[in-house]
Image (cartoon, rainbow, N blue to C red; front, top):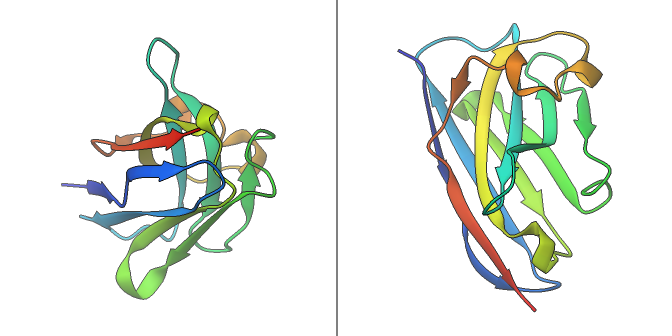
Length: 126
């Protein structure tokens, strides 16, 4: 049974930083990619960043490129999202997801992911 559990969300002022974590369990993820998505109130869930577990290849949405960094710690089976220079428009529920790894640039679609966490809320005040 695959489980993904996010943590690290909270309230932060614009320009601040947060680091989200996603603890993964239930299988080995060497052939998987992990992603972060977010969903703001009244909007569709959108891609934020993805990483291939085996190679650490990464891909980012244009809206977060240069501000967010995705990484993973294999020894802890944990995925991270370091978020710097946060903006009010980054306010959303953030979800981690896992799916079979394909070309990293294709891992922007929700359909590529089989497993999802429950989400953690991030609020950026202006």
